[in-house]
Image 1 (cartoon, rainbow, N blue to C red):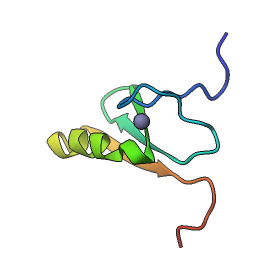
Image 2 (cartoon, protein in one colour):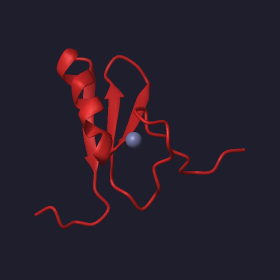
Image 3 (cartoon, protein in one colour):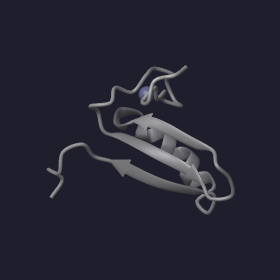
Length: 67
Ligand SMILES: [Zn+2]
């Protein structure tokens, strides 16, 4: 049994707390997903920059203070 939000960062392998915003990468040709801390976004960006057609990047904010 796993909890509902046991999300690990694909860059540093540490858990991403539910209250933190995170970056999600989703492969367009599959079901695979990767999650990153916002502080680890550089690693995600590297991957996306290498193969931009393959990934869909979503930044999930918790609070709507970005605007
Ligand atoms: Zn991380």
